[in-house]
Amino acid sequence: MLKKIIMEGELGVVIGEAESGVASITSILDMQPDVVLIDLLMPELDGIETIMKLRKEDFQGQFIMISQIVNKEMVGEAYENGVEFFIHKPINRVEVQSILRKTAEQFRLKDSLLAIRESLENINPGKTMQRKQSVKEIVLSILNDMGIIGEVGSDDIVKAMEVLMNESERRTQLPPLKDLYEAVAAKLDSPKVDIKKESKAIEQRIRRTILAAINNLASLGSIDNTNPEFEYYAPRYFDFQEIRHQMLHIQDSKFDSLKVKINSKKFLQVLYLETLDKYKKQ
Amino acid sequence: MLKKIIMEGELGVVIGEAESGVASITSILDMQPDVVLIDLLMPELDGIETIMKLRKEDFQGQFIMISQIVNKEMVGEAYENGVEFFIHKPINRVEVQSILRKTAEQFRLKDSLLAIRESLENINPGKTMQRKQSVKEIVLSILNDMGIIGEVGSDDIVKAMEVLMNESERRTQLPPLKDLYEAVAAKLDSPKVDIKKESKAIEQRIRRTILAAINNLASLGSIDNTNPEFEYYAPRYFDFQEIRHQMLHIQDSKFDSLKVKINSKKFLQVLYLETLDKYKKQ
DNA sequence: TTTAAATGTCGGATTTTGTCGGATTTTATA
DNA sequence: TATAAAATCCGACAAAATCCGACATTTAAA
Image 1 (tube, protein in one colour):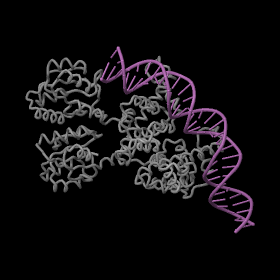
Image 2 (spheres, chains in turn cyan, purple, brown, yellow):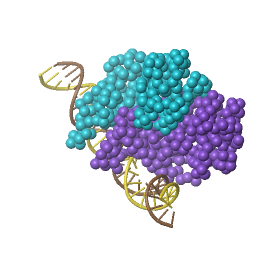
Image 3 (cartoon, rainbow over the protein chains, first blue to last red):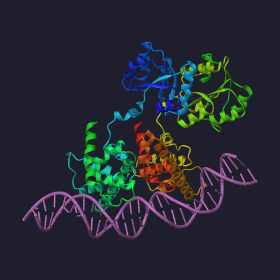
């Protein structure tokens, strides 16, 4: 994104990228860019530490720091260690262009050469790493990836997984779905619910939610079949021929969409095993 | 505080202060300072509006904007309206000195004359950057990513999320939308509002806002379907087939764009769960 | 002042959801 | 292997919820 802004704005030539502060040091010393764009928060060696190491190695280029301001002491420290400007998250094109232009003007740089780092975009949720995810969170995250978190059956699916995960004996195979749905129904607070009836309602809700997942993933796959979510979920959670059939329908209405077969058992089984796996691994 | 930093650092002569955007205009036009330090968020007339008015009055000085960054569109707008630099809250001495020095160098100003405004200092406790994000801020950030922060229904969406988040029992499933919209309508200050009518107006505003989001994301996706915002939001918040359909329309006008189905329920459900998740995780 | 765009109003169109019985598939047993 | 029982999936329908579109009104821009 940042690289794109720079290129499209003709603000300079991007000569390199690095994945971390540590990794950037030798690159920067080798390439000697005029300007380094650097993230404040990075794994292993943060932005300021990276700058200090580079200064020790006698690097003379300018630094522009990318950050989401969290701490005024850090800002001060960054400036004291030679940062010329900050670019703030979320990144704004006009700000990037303005800052880079000013840097170029100030230091009379012509073909500004930049080393940048982008991977901070992926590391952002640092806080989640420090807390164990609940079953609910794990399941919701998976459903979110499939784009079905808003479906009315999602809640039932989450509860079903909670029921399974709360069993003292960790099974591999699911119990009969009817029993599972009844256990979910029994879990509801309301004592007036007819367990049998509610169980049938849960069954239908889950079925419809899984249909929504099929449609969503098929739509995704028909735009870009290398989409990560499509690639991961479509073949694992579903009978892939159903997804494929739906994709064909989306791309060409000759194909009848109304006959998609829903394999609830498979979906719930795979979801359960993945939830179990993720829960154990944290 | 800002005044103190300027004086102690011998960064210029503070020639005046004003209590609001409106009040500053005549002062600034009278005094014609070289540099105006101005808050982005002010009562009555905000920083950008103040700048625009001053430009209309042919004011030629430079602007440095003081702000807590919340919105990249606003940042962009500020730069486009002639802001040279941002100073970020909480105010850091080194940053102030650095920015003012750069401004002076850039414009060859000697006895920089500044008009400043301090009263925002009293509204904003210095530690705000380490404060928990409000529900509003979380929601606005998400809406911002979708490019719909200026849409008329955004405010309603924020209020709806606040209503939900303020419930003592944290639900997973939304209440009936009609009830939710009525709760939002009831939350308005004006006692004369017809709740039923306002609720219907809220419904339509939200609907139109979601349509705008679909169009934005479809535009993004048709340019680059690996765009991070597109990849994240399009399949999760919307029926992806609708996004896909709109993308096809954008790329080829043979496809009718007028029949996009708006799934408000899904949008609000996903937004709620994401807001809840982010709120809990901070 | 006029025109176009944005927003509100309101009744109706369409979809969603729960219910329930049956169709189909899978499993176990003779 | 055939059959019966169990399990899973399915579809139709009515009530409730949600979505929709046309037109009126308001607002903003020319």
